[in-house]
Amino acid sequence: MDENNTTYMKLKTRNQYTFKDQLKADKCNKFIGFGRFGSSTLSYANDYQKMANCGEYLLSDVIFISANGGQKNAEWISNIKLAECEIKIADNKGINKFVTDNKYHRNRQYNIGERYIAELLTELGYTENDGEWTKN
Image (cartoon, rainbow, N blue to C red; front, side, top):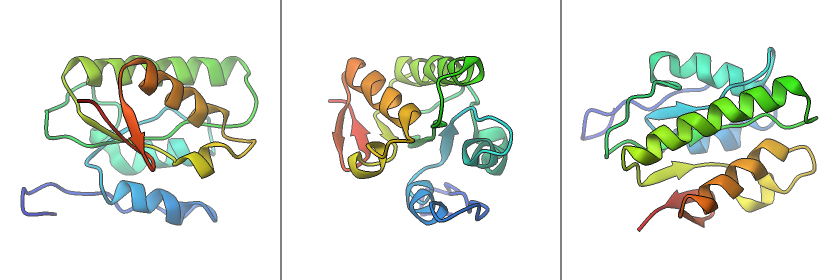
């Protein structure tokens, strides 16, 4: 909990990437991400519980976004579209800060979902500084 009584999430360790994801979670009080069974994205949504994909956002919220990588199959498309809708809800509420994978991690071959999210945030008018997206 910080000086504003905001609680940040401790993620369950899943793999070698949890450390970088915990660094993102340490900055965020809400989470957007819909993951397939067994994925880090689903695990993180479970960690955040009611603060994940909640549809309710305050201007002070900072939102961690995670998206599955891998293959573009029907489940991936469904999950990425759900995330897109939730991101647009947050954007419409005036959210000014999202946190995602930085360019280095986003550009790993596997991370198609992270690249999709970066394109969406860019289209919505956000600019990135090392995985932190803001809108002026």
